Length: 167
Image (cartoon, rainbow, N blue to C red; front, side):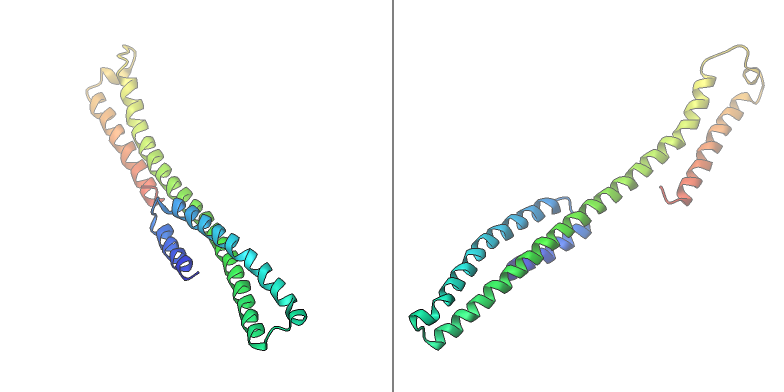
């Protein structure tokens, strides 16, 4: 149980550090605790069966006390295993939540950069169509105005997303 609890502490640190190998380790420790539980559960039944025959077989008091200690230990280990399994479930849930948060943060960043690049691309594509009826094409400052509009829109969106902590 000490080894399992040590592993549990290490897994908690691993989850909060963002290690991507944490879910696999959680699963492996869960399997290990299931194996431990399968080993401990029959022991409780065996010890209780032995204790039930104390009076019939006139077992010595020292052995009765020793088997009582063994029964207490197996019961305590069984409870600890249940607690570890519950903690592993909670840690797995926390890991999934943290992973989703990181994914959402990445999506915010990617979406922000996409929006920043959208307006300059839109303006450039409209001006790239080479229509004759666009008054800005024949205007002396049409090209600098289009470039300025692209830069201003990108800078404004960058500032907005930076203030919202998306970048």
